[in-house]
Amino acid sequence: MSSLSFPPARAVGRGAAWYRGDCHVHSVHSDGELTPEELAVRARAAGLDFIATTEHNSAAAPDVWGHLAADDFLIVLGEEVTTKTGHWLALGINPGEVVDWNHQVRDGLIDQGLDQVHRAGGLCVAAHPHAPYPSGDFMFPFRGFDTVEVWNGLWTSDRPWNADNEAAFAEWGRSLAADIHTGSWRPAMGNSDTHLEGQIGIPHTVVFAEELSAEAVLAGMRAGHSWIAESAKVDVSFTANVDGRVVGVGERLATHGGQVEVQAAVRGVPVGTVRCRSALRRLALGSEVVEELKQDLDRVLLVFGRQVRDVVPAVRDGDVQDLAGPGVVAVAASAGDEPVVPAGEEAGTAMTGRVLVVAGQECGQLVEGVAADEQGALADAGEVLALVHLRELFHGSEPMSA
Image 1: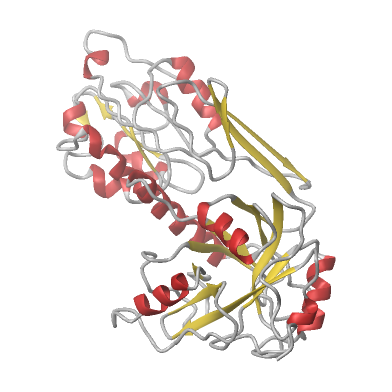
Image 2 (image 1 turned 90 degrees about the vertical axis):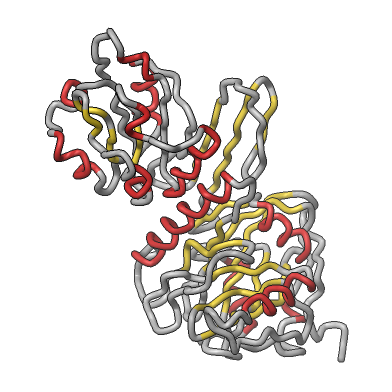
């Protein structure tokens, strides 16, 4: 075989930089309609720096992709492992290597495939977890996978974002809160799943890599130094700063109780909404804090005090759960001497993904049996959870309104 039988694992690139890539692409060598040459031309035209070959249950053929790589364009070898109970991407595998697709949920064989990819230094991606077609629904647990494809492309729709993406994003968010609580987390990824003309790069993942190589790009994705864009026109910057220490996307910041300043800038979109989400363990109480959080946290409604009607007059005791619809977090507070959420039900309520628990007069009744170091477990839903253990605040004081 010639040196161009397979693409090189490293391109010249721009050194340490942000690179754009689409890691879910099909050609005429599986069920796509475009040739590798057409895919490469369109990917470069879309502003991408790299793509991954992910034919169904087969390796990239020799003498097909190698000549399409360039100093500024990387091609990563991969495979879409297509099983009866879900699809997943094996990225960064060796030339000619195939991962066996003949496994299903509960047969215990998935770990062998994951281990094979990891031994090659590759990345395992849970693909389109809620795709609306047979076998597209991802039934495997996320455990063992490095990232989750929360945004899958156009498919047969004319819209880039569909209900299956919304479901995948919500599921990833719930697992994210739980993973962070245990000290680990699983980053998100967006890919086009190109099969047809006009799909490549919609969406794609933007990753910070030390160089334009398969190893560096996959390492950046694994670490979460990445974000997702619909087109190369979109640019995002995000930093968090505490006491002069600044981190960016995917990095960690030890606050040591200090105040964190977050800055986000989005360019290249005509209109949009910036949402800031957090899993809060404790909140300082005060009307100014409530007002600030109402402004900064897009889906959060905070209610403090014994009389919930004093804060939200239209809310009756029995209507609290009705607040748990799209775009708002339900309120669990105390009304009079009885908690709105009975003792023992708060954890189940919190798993809806839309619940903010605010302890009222009887904090113990509302979050009975939840130790301080276990509070984050209630935040598995991926939204904001506030547990306030300041029972004395409401004794002998007037109800606080926001």
